[in-house]
Amino acid sequence: CTLDSEVALRVGGDFFFDPQPGDSPVNLVLIAGGVGINPLFSILLHIADLHGNQEGKGNRHKLGTVKLYYSAKNTSELLFKKNILGLMKAFPGKITCCFHVTQQHSQICKELQPHITGK
Image (tube, rainbow, N blue to C red; front, side, top):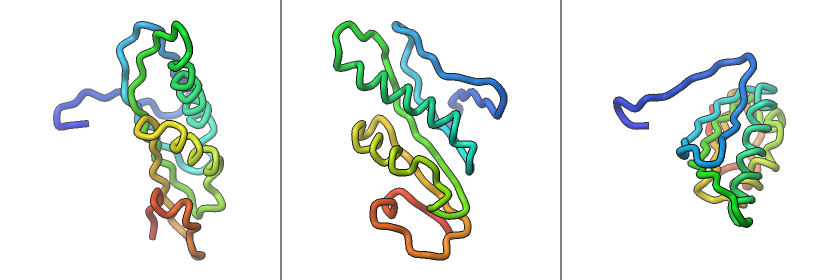
């Protein structure tokens, strides 16, 4: 976003992301903490599926980028981290993630290091 950008914010409750063919592309920022990743991971998988189908015939979805910010106490509590890393690798520049840990006491594995911040 830039200064004066309009954003929509939704916290908790019943929400979904279901772009329709012909809709203008939107850029998403998904913010999750702990097990709150579950519904956002579903959205991320749906977007990855749509990106994958763009290579197929007749897909008219126009997709923007997705940036996931995901926080947990430590890397062992980052659910789906390997899947998320795989999505970033499969869709570079389209799906990105920044992990954050608040109480990490052990060394962070090399695979996560470029994508993680913490105390």
